[in-house]
Length: 526
Ligand code: KIV
Ligand code: ZN
Image 1 (cartoon, helix red, strand yellow):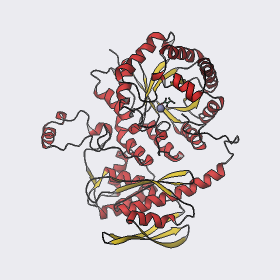
Image 2 (cartoon, rainbow, N blue to C red):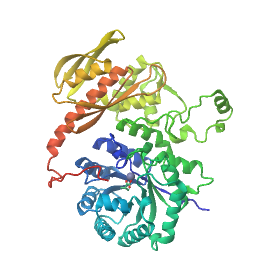
Image 3 (cartoon, protein in one colour):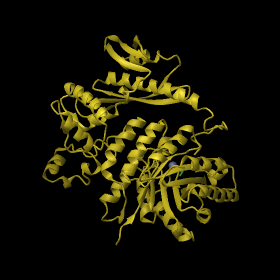
């Protein structure tokens, strides 16, 4: 029997960004989108253009760079939302507008304050307007899994008659269980007269830990598009994880007669990118991309693995882009080997950039015996030591601390062109460093998140630090990596302050540029 294609619709940049504390900058979104495009994601939901200037800009920029993927913008059933989405997508080679409205009695009554007939009129109108911008229109009945069935069928029929070519069934609150959700998809196929004119999609949230199972059950029952995110990030408990769905279909092709176009060997790199950009570490036992997903600890397992890897491994680490050869380069490796390794990892840099990175690599190799692939990725990602001119630059740092004395930090820093020495005591070394640094800008900064991740094994592993700070409702994520956790922390905090300053200025400049109407939109109205 011929295999059927399942379309992969990635919403890391939209629903994923709605994860509490996970806002991404426009540049971050563009770099994630470019990797999603490379890995052959069919549709990238790049944002919700009416929600904020940043979202509009991100969708617009991603539309320009995507080669393979269809770019999608989200819009509520409101004229302005749809217009903004249409405008942001103007330059996309392939574009889709995704419009939605709630259909469950609960949402209609309490959230929308609308009657059923008003919702039906809104569906017709919103899809008709969206069709003026693109033929590719997706429609979602929000809270579908809790919507009264006959009303759900009716709204879907009307949406298809109005021009929607993809009907997405969201389990908005992650309430469904697999057999029930599969039944729902089957019943839609049996009860909506024109359903053959549209693709059925599903969008499952993970509140009960069933998002991937529900998505697979939906595929078995006729869904041919799944909406998902890298690392499963998303609103509340997140969305179905892209990597789990793709690898489930691939690994169990004996039972699941479907395929996707995803290049699975890119999974490890993009998972790492999303984790560093959002500051959300991947839990070690997370399927497919967790640090322990391919680690075998017990003696019995290790013995089995040595005799035949199939004994305890159903997926090879290489198939999702993790390298099995751990030690990759050392102190004596030359520039050529370094360049080849970067190419193997999928990076193409100019000679100038390679020279800069090679210098950093040599410095690292002098201080660290074994260099792993992850060390190289951290070196490339090191946002805490950018080569462009920054407001603040770390020159030197020394810390004194111990169990019987107060921690103190002395930091030599360049503020534009002036060198300054900052000194501060604190409740521990990190508190001392951050207290010293936050004095360089007058406003009050709140630290929202501080996270340390050891990139490789051993006590000489590179530490990758992420901090999220807030100043008067602007939040930014800063990152830094170094062999020394305290230096990495200082770099991350400085990186965040530099971003804060840029963001503040941009906000001032951007006023009235796109949003002349000065409308205030709550980004989390969904
Ligand atoms: O969870 C949800 O219902 C959504 C819709 C906008 C599809 O994210
Ligand atoms: Zn959602």
